[in-house]
Image 1 (spheres, rainbow, N blue to C red):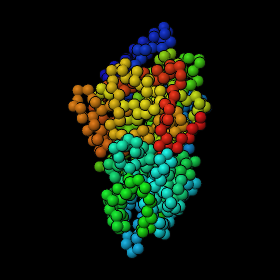
Image 2 (image 1 turned 90 degrees about the vertical axis):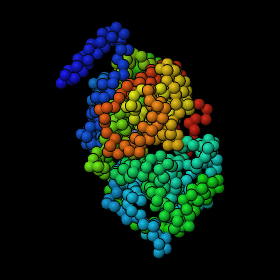
Image 3 (image 1 turned 120 degrees about the vertical axis):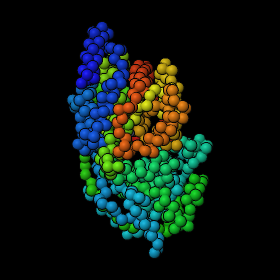
Length: 550
Ligand SMILES: [Zn+2]
């Protein structure tokens, strides 16, 4: 109780201070990123009552309503027909029961245990799906890549129409940055690309081979992410095969052996220049039934209006996703996937920045569109819908600043600004970081392809310059490798698991520092006379099909 009354006193005081400030300057620079506010939102959004914030569920809608309420309380402008919610239409498919799936080679079968060895989902469809596989041919297509810029074509001379394509996740390994990005993952390595390319080739299904190192996460993440309802935008049908999913490394090894191949050889062949897709002896048998429904889940949008009449109709979009995985298979008796770090934390900061931007909008030239987006976990669907259906003409979106999972472990010496180097946003980021005495660190895990795994990518695909902020791992007063080990433990134990829960011990000093970086970035982008521009040759088109509206 005592604490509560202190907090309300502080709120009252800050209101008073902000009112005095407002009357003088039209805004108050003393309103700063506030730790208690971030914690307040974080507690609400990660609570069990939010049921893991899955799109189209009561919990998901509750979270959206909470965010909208906050936007309204902060005085953000509603921009969707007078409201804050932008409904995103989606198709959800859920596999019924535990399908029987086998790979049959003559009288021999590589039997696949559902969930242990294989997880499949149905693509978008207008009605319930019933797929039967009387023996569908399977083609091993290596990494499943077609790169017109280099002529690399894993499908050259091979017809995969109506067949199943078996592909490795990731792109061919190398230390040469000019060969599929070297150690870094290119878009060709993402599983989303594998399915898109297989669909372009006319394949019926995509089977992606998992390996923890190559995927960047363990098999358990595949299980939890793929076993529940899968969502798509309704018009995504042409870039999906009718079913897609993963097989475990162990199952793939058994399959390769039955074909007289071994894991290492298969990998080596797939990564070598001139690889050719290879029809396998085995056939896919079994089938799959899936329920299909249409749902809507909202993006939550609100605008802090910029003060410069020349540029107030240009918008910087700030994104962070509020959805998570909902309720799923229980682990240690807990079936609620709270997604506290991923991404109640980022949403909490987005809300706090919205409050700040509204209170200090006199410092903004351009306007800032705050967007808590939905269905990120389902393939960046909410942000994609927003980028394709913005509440203002797409030409008026000048930049995107995105973050996903913020720092809850203390202040750092560094910050990661993914993709900034691709555009004039790099100079802005550099100025902000030097002003704050922070280093810019490269992504500590370039092999994981983070640049393609968060919502800014939806804007990049539309040709809009973007920066994806992530915290650095050089934590103040900690040994140099402390942060990296922390992240590895998180990905191993808690990422996309019910144990991603709010911990009152989380220290939010780092969140405040991170928020300050984003805020200063917004102020600067809002003020630069020229709208942000791509650098020549960017965005690097490796595998990215740009859907530029401009
Ligand atoms: Zn996330």
